[in-house]
Length: 165
Length: 428
Image (tube, rainbow over all chains, first blue to last red):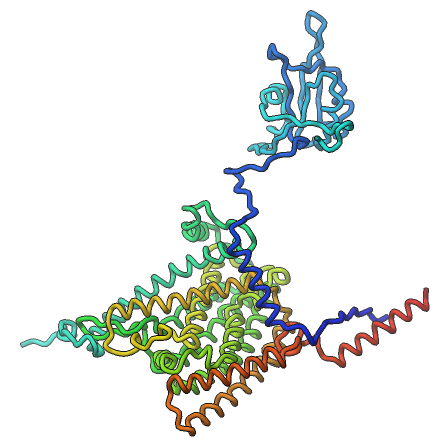
């Protein structure tokens, strides 16, 4: 079996390496003197995130400072990555609240189902990406951590307004 | 009266500012020049690493280093980092050679600079000081001899690392540098024919009278330029490194400051090559369109201005090296070899013949070396360059794909391809 060799038809009579080089140099020089640069100077200037950006979670609070979560158990049920740990509790008035609410951000796939399914609009994904930590266990966010986050939250995709207008 | 073993007498003697100094002053002046030139050279090389990163960034629409002292201290930061880093030695390496190789590649790059004249002579109260570290009468031959030594560092680095990528890089570099050295040497024969002298100062003076060699010997300049890229292992001829094929080529196994030395050697080679191009083909420290800077009496002002002219030329060629690097893709190895042997060498040989015949004819015609001589040479060169790059060069001569363009071979390959597709159709 011989190998099929592909031979390109070059316009041999018209091409010239030296001419092409000069053309290339003109192009690179144009970019060299072009003041427009595409780099974002990260710590100084930051990228504008899309309103639908899905980053690390945030738990919203009611006016009296308690978390909005009623420990209904929908988010751990719907979570495809199984990253939400919820232990429900009940106070003397019969109101349910989360005794334990943890999200393992390493397991999370940021699908946003928890936000979509939440009847109280308590758990949200955040428009946020600066998540660096010094140890792995810091990535398991507990209720206190989730409630103390202040970054803006994700606006989920709205079927009535698919383009976000 | 007792005699001192080394008489202080010559040091104290005042001399004529327009005449060469006595031996004692010469010695002192040479040491001072060595220190100054070496310092400026090393700082310049360090700044070149920054310049390369900045220029590459701008060409790619980026900003480049701008954090450490607004970017200006980046070379210092790199140096500190490289000195502090751990040096690793491959277990199976040949350690003495492994340690020696960076120095061997670094030192020749620097030595060459010693013979390059960088300004017109400086008059001092003790005599006229030549603005060159060592004004060798065979300066140009010295350059050629020393620039060939650089390959040893690279080959030894590649071999002693005991790593197949490094070895391949070293082998490639030796083949490449030897091939292009021939073309380079041949192209400079034209310069020697025209100047009739191998002293670099004499070559500069010759260009001051007849015009720059880049105009009089354009094709030799072209060959020298291409060969200089190959000699310095810069893109498009950076076969020895070729990171997409050989990781980092000959310095794959090097770390910390030893790696940095190879890096510095590359830039030192670039500076030397730029200075050689400027000296041999762009008049060295000569200021164009004037004669007053070349003739005695020499003054401090002339020295400063000619130094400025020389530095400008060298900086332009350094920029040119970087500009080309970020414009052209790498040649394939066989393309490189065929360009060197099948094009550059015959072209250089043919050009020597033409230039020698032309010089003989002009001398027989009794035309003195001067503007008229230069004008005739320039006219002939315009015709030759037009012939080479417009009529002859249609993808056939100067082309990285040159080796592929054997018509019969292409026809044979086409026939095989056609037969295969026929077979495939029949089977289907």
